[in-house]
Length: 344
Image 1 (cartoon, rainbow, N blue to C red):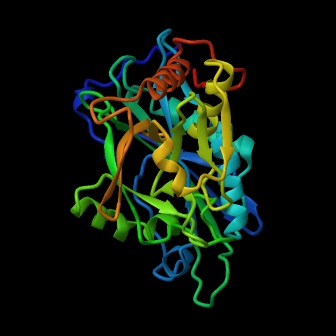
Image 2 (image 1 turned 30 degrees about the vertical axis):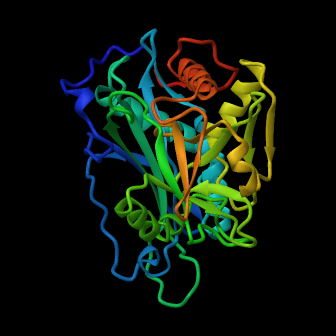
């Protein structure tokens, strides 16, 4: 159990922004192997101007959170899945994977070192954890780097929903998020770079996010710029889109398990035709930061798809999913074995 008191910050007023903390973790790959890694205090990274990450975008990252539970422990939620997903991202980008067991230990180490930055239970705030890896040596010909840097930074972030989770309005994008057989199923920095122009345009038009359709046929739902999608049918079935171009969200996989094993719901992970969407009664986006963001409307080039759950609050089924998963994360409900990783 944690014995270090949280810092005296106004946790409820924190946004989702970077704030430097005391320590970060770093490990270097050179001559075919990773070094032992260490905690450092310097938040700055110095690289050669011709570093591979600048020239050919060889980078991948992860995102997870640490928080205090009701019984006073500091925990992370399923960091082994983040470790495996980063391993898969590295393999696809021809980078040397950081070992899964070392990833989890590094997360524990850096969170423990920054214990005072973990927000208090009940504040709605969390300690956001950002592991990332980059090609660090100079490369001018198009090829993978020979040297790499793996780092983990942590920063406290405020509650995602200030004043409650209000349903959002999203739009069907004319842009493609990922190519068939591309990198849509990994957490590569380049995936997010190409989504910036469409999201800025969506925000300018008054929408919270873009819904991307499959780039091959533009008939099937994929995901948004930063989250998987979930739907609820009239008979209470949870439906999640399936595609080789979708990032395998840890939150989405956890919600599917919770739906089936805690709430007794039927779960379908399958291709979802865009033409089906008006038949669903609830819709949401799921991811680490918000867990679930309810969607009230989807704008399809001026034509509105309105969900029966409305624009005032989460739909009843998505609310149950949200309450159950956050209850597990915060220690109010018993977690499946292996889901909660204690730091202290």
